[in-house]
Length: 121
Image 1: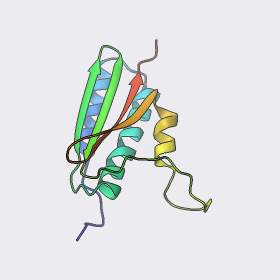
Image 2 (image 1 turned 30 degrees about the horizontal axis):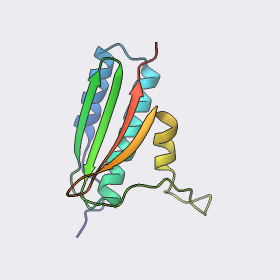
Image 3 (image 1 turned 45 degrees about the vertical axis):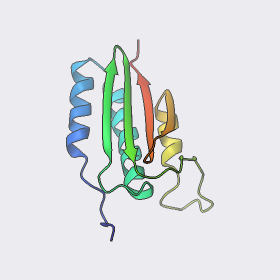
Image 4 (image 1 turned 30 degrees about the vertical axis):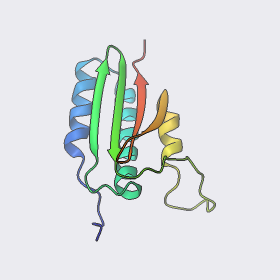
């Protein structure tokens, strides 16, 4: 039985914020990174058959890459809900709008969904 609430990702969000703050990123870019991460994390839990998604964060020189692993081989496809009042269906559009690059890579046991965000010059 699946838990009703996603696993806690507070520690990852705090670490992500700390890394970007220390690197001198603007507060709005940090907010965008946190929101995009949250969307991928919840999607991995909700749609990826993964009770506790693994997260990989790297910052190489001025590009942040966040990857979230799950156990579903189904690659994400952004879709718009047919109901304008639907409570879900907009997350991947949000990730695409907030980041510079976004995608998914199949693995032997599922997939890695990722985004990249470049620091402002």
